[in-house]
Image (cartoon, rainbow, N blue to C red; front, side):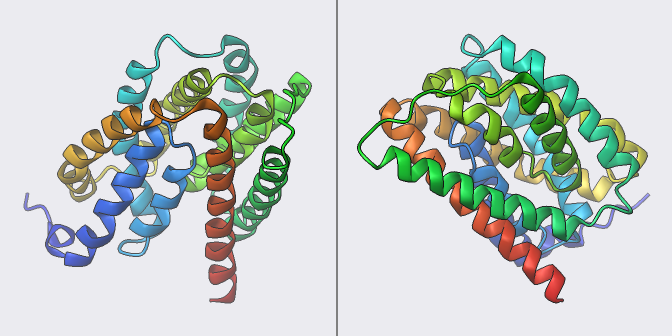
Length: 259
């Protein structure tokens, strides 16, 4: 059987795909939020569902690098609270993928991210460090469910996760390690759904394989860079990234609704 490799000969695929994979790698290496900016770039070249299928194997490999690098630094309580909700959300996203209003979901995520990131950034930059705050576990389960659902639909599970986890002010490495493990498990859980949807085609897997070396190198670069950042400045940076992700999600949603 001959495999159609047209996408690999499209200069635009490389022009947008390579920066997207670098952003994903930096995100998996610890710059939380960068990865969410990648999917829209790939989706400019291929349909969104195909873009998600190309990206997922790369995310899984990048997850392995991030988990290995921060394997000794993660919060078990957060994992116990959020993982069941994430599994439920992924299942709901698979079952109702055809009927869920993706554009409105992305718009809601975008606005929440902008407001949340802006509020936390204002507090952090106001001179008085924001105290750690742990919301009830049921809020964590709810956030995880929404995270699983939006991750299944558009690989955009970070904003709901951040709403419950970020205010706890975990140490930098614990936050990065917990995030890496949580999303690594989520991405593996999503694999059967993508198989059932028939999205792991030869051309999609070939495109993933072509981008794989860049994905691995970018993740290692992210790990090295994030460990050089002062922990206090780290939270200021991730809140700024959260706002940037929110603006991007909102823009994409409005563009789809207008179209």
